[in-house]
Structure formats: structure tokens, C-alpha cells
Length: 84
Image 1 (cartoon, rainbow, N blue to C red):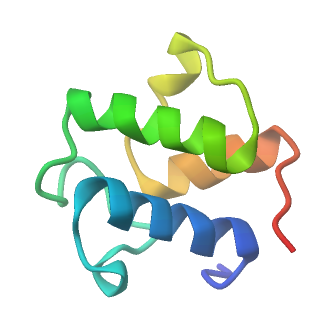
Image 2: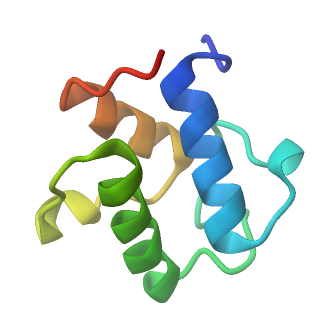
């Protein structure tokens, strides 16, 4: 997988910033299961930050997918988000 895509890099940075963890520790496999502080409160913060950063609207049902970096990337790409 291309972990260096624009969307992937931006999502990794977003997760790093919101959760207060080092960027280098955030990978596609990072999720609520292996990142301290990835809880329901911070999922809301991730959703709000993603809406601003990527200029998308995220429904509560879509927010349920914000359980891993890979899922966030997949969701954003399904919405046509492209980072150049």
C-alpha cells in the first residue's frame, strides 16, 4: 500500500495532532486498539478536524468508521478527497 499518498499523509498528521502522539508512530494500521487516547471523545475530535481539513461533511453513521487510520483514509477516498 502507498502510505505516502497525500491523503494518507494528511490523515496520519491529523491523527497525530488530535491524539497528541508522534507522527512517526501513526501508521495505516493504527487504530483505537493500539493507540492510547483513541476513544469516543477523540473520534468526535477527529471527525471535526477531518471535516475542516478535507472540506467534507461526515454524518454520525460515517463517523462510526473512524476506528483506524486505514478506515479514515478509505472513507475520505470514497468521498473523492484528493490531496496534491
